[in-house]
Image (cartoon, rainbow, N blue to C red; front, side, top):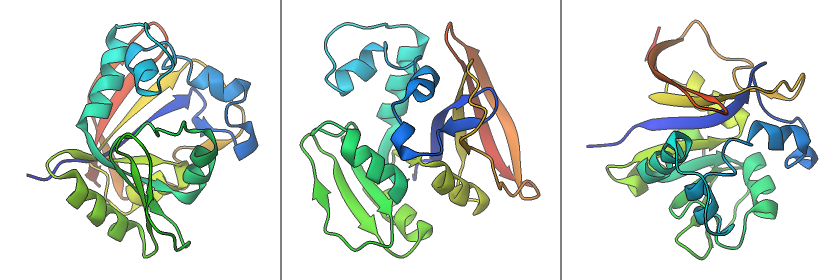
Length: 206
C-alpha cells in the first residue's frame, strides 16, 4: 500500500515559514522560528550535534516525522541553501528528489542520502519519490513555492504545522497563492507543547 504525501513546517503566527532572502536563513528570525526543534534529542542525534537533549512530545514528533518518511521532494531553492548548510552526512538518510531545470548526476552523501535531480516537473518527481519510498510516506520538504505547487495540484494528503510564537512581518508565506477554491482542510489533531502548537490537517478536494 502506498504511503501518504505530506509536508511539515514551522510557521510564524503571521504565516511565514522562511525569510525572503537565502542569506537570512540561519538569521535571528529563522532561529527563533525553529527554536523548538534545536533542543530535541532526536534532532541533535540526527545532525550529530552531540549527545543529550529533550525527550518530550516535541522530540517524539520529530522522530515520528523522520521515521514515516521514505523519500523527500524539494525545490531547487531549498536545495541550494541546504547544500551550503547541511553537514557532509545530510540529515535525510533517504533518497531526495530535487525539482529543477538543471541537469545533474545524482549526488550521493554519506549516511544514505542521495539527491536525484528531476527536470520534467513535480509529478515526475513525486512518482519517483513514491517508488523509492515503498510503503512509507513521501515528504515535500519545501521550500514554500514547491509545497504550494503540490498543494494546488491536489497532490498533498496531509500536512503539519508547528505554529511558533514569533512574528516575521515579511518573508515567504506558506499559503500565498493557494487555490482556496480547490483545497479544503479537515482537522486531524492539535497538540500544544511548551514552545509551539502542532497542527495537523488532512487535505480534501473542495
